[in-house]
Length: 188
Image (tube, rainbow, N blue to C red):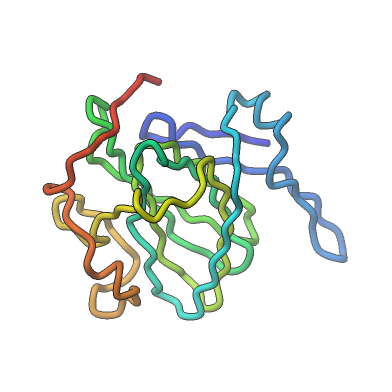
């Protein structure tokens, strides 16, 4: 597995080995042993999956507060997404910055999003399926989020605001400026 550190400390792009032949392909999306060899010791406790039927569906920017904060390992089962993480760790040299990567089923890429980040994505194709592992169980009382198109964050989404498809809940999320972060940067 190829593991690449991205510009925000702790954020990693993983590329599992893909074995292809005339039938299609096989890839190993998670192996505790392989991850440990790459220095990733996150213990995942829950798997989640979403299907977005329309291109331009935005699911963002979500997080859970401590003590139910979640790290995520995201990959695409079908289609492709523009995947985004925003650093919310007070004291981080990249606090308030975002990074976006394209993940696709064909490429097999995965994004490891540590605790202390908001996470979201925009579908680039219809009928896009996304799966992700988390290291803490879903806790509705700890659920928070930031509005996807906050001008202070300046995320360059691949969809116009007038064409983005959002849940009613995501349309009501607050701003980065008003978010009081409980996360602190612990170093690289």
